[in-house]
Amino acid sequence: MGAEIAGLVLLVAGALDPLEGSVLIATGGALAVLGAWLNRSRRRRLIYQAFVLLIAGIGAMLVLSWLGGIGGSTGRSMWWMLVVLPYPVGWILMLAGLILSFRDHRNKIRGAMAQTSFNSSGNPR
Image 1: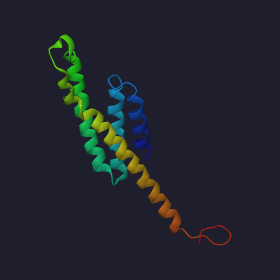
Image 2 (image 1 turned 180 degrees about the vertical axis):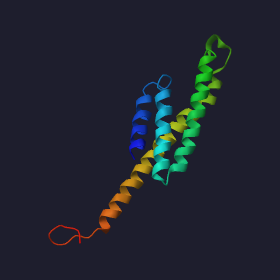
Image 3 (image 1 turned 30 degrees about the vertical axis):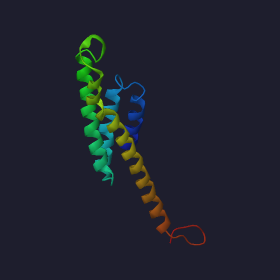
């Protein structure tokens, strides 16, 4: 669970500047994938797919930036931004997967606590 929490923090921190923060976001996504894999989260497939989208979008953004950007005098229309679309879609799906994973973990703990019976003095039987 710790890797998933660290991943969430990095995902949110990197979102303050999507271009410069892409390294933080990619690292946060990798930590989220690691945490989901280690915890055998029910939502790990969603997190894996979101990570693929995230990395593809970040790669496209970095390539476009390396080529000089889009619009203006570059000769590339603004439609080239569509190749970067997997980046925000992956980011949103990653957040959704992590939130659902945290909720599942919380419900699992609550269910385990509800099954524990206590005697009148408050001690487990």
